[in-house]
Image (cartoon, rainbow, N blue to C red; front, side, top):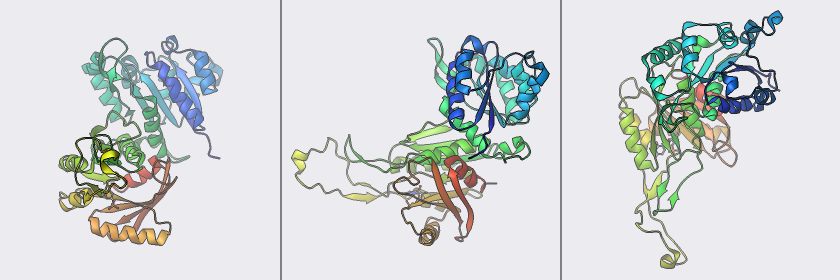
Length: 408
Ligand code: C5P
């Protein structure tokens, strides 16, 4: 069994505090030890008994409680990761100047653990120059900022400032945690090693329309591509995702271009590639599409017992991006194969990388319960010479980090 990690969830006084319960729950179900430090204002929005029941630990708020055990330092020192969700404009300002006038402020100052914060506030407060400067300060110190999203706010208004979905906050926190060496030094400096790098990723599976209601598709959920986006974002990269029919949410800080078919993905990737330093083609792209798309629904009364489809080849996006690559651009492809023999799988991979012309190829086996749609993945990464440069097996985010390590 894995050793439980200690996750401190700081909750500050915003209406989104009720959603923090889901973050606490997710880490508890993940087997981590979760300690909630709530501000007094947070407890006006969500009840202490709820947080204690869900975290399975006492919830602390008061700086002057448990003084004998030096609690204001102990909680921070024990943390492997601190998440502040929601982080109000006020709490962000306090963090930026290093104020320690409550238990949460002390906990954070006394900790060397990475800090992930999920801002939540009204649009005007988020756009205020003071908040903008405070967020920039925190980011420059290695704090991972998740969100906020754009959408319905507490009142009738809509705009930027909505707390990121708990599922995405947890995924981003796991992406940060994934890079911490057990028992190692604080990894805060290593967390943002891709700061400013422009990374373009494709994810999901294309759908090739037959008629207005039907398509030819594949079983890709987009989880590996989204995990790459989350991991790259957590490492400080500027991420663009060309997303085809995803089953999972994407962090709002990722620039997302939604597409459906291979032809649409080709156009979107070609355009986005102009400003990308790194391109990762994780999408499952259909090799063929129906030659004609029927205007009306295909009806069996008109077709009879046998329907024959005529398919035409789709553009090979990876090959065309590789052929048109700019100087210094790094291109990584995937090879999802059903081959079960490890040696034959590598032989297929070696033939594919020379055909595609990319710099690295991530070879993974897919099939029922393997690769597509699952939470884990096992990959072997080949370079242009067909040499194995990396192997990884684990959560899709840990596989993503192993791939991103190639960027350097
Ligand atoms: O040819 P195959 O589909 O096996 O190659 C897989 C790799 O090529 C993946 O990186 C996939 O995203 C990419 N691909 C592509 N355009 C296609 C087919 C696959 O870019 N039409």
